[in-house]
Length: 287
View (cartoon, rainbow, N blue to C red):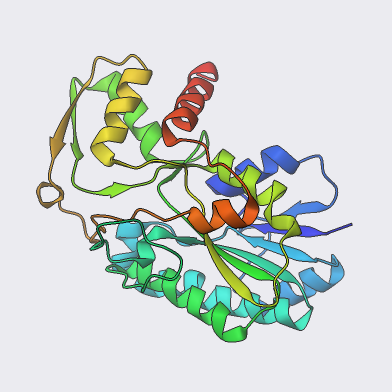
């Protein structure tokens, strides 16, 4: 039996993985409160005592704007913890599936970024995630994987979709950035891909893949679909990113090229519009 440990169990992806595997005794889930990943000795003991064979690392510092202020905390969790986790996995011959982000790219491209594209993050969050990736590559972990995703949303936690649904009930109009483009990704789809495809993944080295729902859009396009799909009368007004100042710069174009993922795993990725419609229906059904 492949013993799988999922870190960051309270995050969007962690909770989606729990929804799929909560009755599976081969899976164990931990939150930050249950196991502090900064405690190297405790993590090593957990891996050894529970005979872990695969780690799915969903733990991350994901507050993009806050990372500009609390950079040390972002680097600690996104780089240092990842490096230590990699060393422990190597010591015990454990496979590691590590989640990363489209924000490792600078957003200056004009076509989707393949896994081989040069990275150039433009904010602390992106740099901390990139340095975490590099730490794993330096360890040359066999049979392990870095999986980048983008614009994640789900029925859990805080995310853009839930924010727009809430504002759509409270306001007559919302202003949304129209000149930042990416690929919205349903965490439920990502969790299913990890469980059905990646757990059987085999490689002699650390590989990098991209997973995102098919198609692309701007934040404005996404907001318009959310309002229409939820039958909200709230208007969506497009604005440039320059009119919405944030502490952290965002890439203007962070579309991930998923061709390698589709080819190697022989999968067809769900279109973002369809997955979003399903998520909105689930949220409305639960009130």
